[in-house]
Every structure is written in C-alpha cells, then in structure tokens.
Image (cartoon, rainbow, N blue to C red; front, side, top):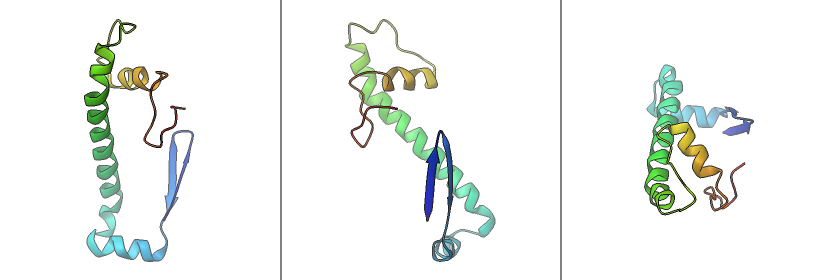
Length: 93
C-alpha cells in the first residue's frame, strides 16, 4: 500500500496482495466506505483526545481570553500555540 499526502490531499494505491486481503473481509464495493468510516472515526477520536488534553491547558493559560466553540477554530487555537507538538513531536505546519 502506498499513501501520499500533499497540501491537504491524500492519494494512494494498493498492491494486488493488499487488495486481496481487504477483499477477504470487505465486499469490494464497501472498501471506499470502510476507509471513509475508519478515517472519520479516527478524526473524531483525535479531536476528543485533543479536547481532553488541551482544554485544561487553555483554561489555565492566563494569555487565553476565550476558547473557541468551533471545531476548526479550536484545532487552530491549539495547533498555533508554541507549546503544541504533533504525534511525531514536531511543531504544527
């Protein structure tokens, strides 16, 4: 399997072995839906985890006057902080 990421877009392909393994458990027409559901679930869980970790930090930061209720604005508020590191330990892009 090869997955590429470029400026917010994902693309990729499966080799024939990977595809056969997926089709062993997933009906061919459901592969796309399976990936969409898996990705959506991971994004949702990541947001919940971010909220659990970062809301107390934002509340206790005297420089923060408001915490955004908007999902996108909240993520930007967290990832634009100088103390934010992503899973690989790198600052946000």
